[in-house]
Image (tube, rainbow, N blue to C red; front, side, top):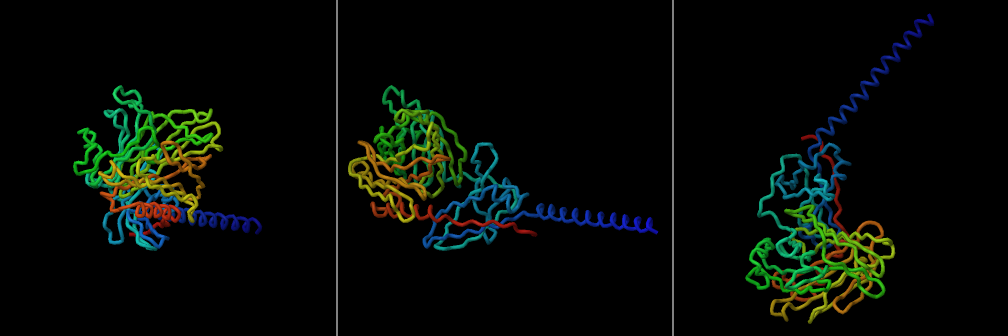
Length: 409
C-alpha cells in the first residue's frame, strides 16, 4: 500500500514538473515572441518651457531603446510623425566604432507643447544632397585648416602646416568665423575659388583671429595669464550629416604654468543652430586644479555684455562688433557655459575671457555661437543677447523624452 502511494506521489510530482516546465517555457516563448514583434516605439516629447523651440534636435540613444524594446534594431529605424509621414533622421556613431549609438531628428516645438513620433523598422533611404544642412572637413590644400558649417553659420580652425607657411605663418588655436547669407553649404566652393574675403552674394571671411581666441577658443588660466596651445595636430569626423556634424580636434601638450596640458576638443553642430557645442577633454597631471578661459577677441567697436550669475546658472558672455568698420555689417559672438557652471570674467590684451574650472571627470562643456545682422534678422546687441539667453534657458530645461514599445500591428 505504501509502495502504491509512493508511486502515485512520484507520478503526480512528475506531472506537476512537466506542467510547470511547459508553463515556464510557454511564458518565455511568449516573451520572446513579444520582443520579436516590437517593430514600433513611440517617442513622446514635452517642452517644459513657456517658449518655442525651433529646430529642436531630438536624440534617442541605442541604450534607451534597448530598455523598452531589446530586439529593436536601431540600424533599421525610421522616424514618422502622427500622420505616418516620414521625418528625416540620422544615425550617429559617437565613439568611432562604426556602429550607431543614436538616432537624431529635428522638430519645431511650441511653448509647453507635447508632440508624438514613432520609430518603425524599415529600409532606411539615403539622404539626398539637398537634405544635408551640415558639413565639415580637414582642408589639406589650405594649410591644414578644419572648416565646418551648417545652414546659418560657418567656422574654421588652423592646422599645423600654417605654422610654417613661409608667406604668412600663424600659430593660433583661436576659432575663426565666416559669415554667410545663404542656407546652402559654401565651404567647398569658397576653398575652390580661394576668393572668400569679398562678399559676392553668399557672405565672406571678414573676421580677424590672428593670435587671439577668436570666437570661442580657449586656454588654461594660470597665474593671472592665459596659456594657449599651438594649432591642432589631428582631426577625425564622427558624424557628417545631414542633421548633425560631430568631429574632434587634438591639440598637442603645451606648457601651462609649469604643467603640461593636452586637449581633445569635440564639436557638435546641428542644422539650423547658431551655436556649436564644444566638449574639451584635458589630459594633465592634476585636472582638479585646472581653470580654463573661453575667449572672445577684442576688436575695435566691440560692445560687451556678460552675466556670470544668471538665474539658471548658465553663465554667458556676448559681443556685438562691426565688421570692416561696419561696412560689412555687424557680428554677434557668444560663449555660454553649461548649466550649473560657475565663472568669473578676466581679460588679456587680445581677449575677453569667461573663466571656469575644468571638469575633473569627463569633458568641460560650453557653447559658442555667432550671428550676422545681414542674414539672421538680429539687428543689435539687445537682440543677440536675447538669443544667447534663450539658449541658456533651453539648456537649463531640456526637452523631456519618453519611449514606449508599441505591440501589435
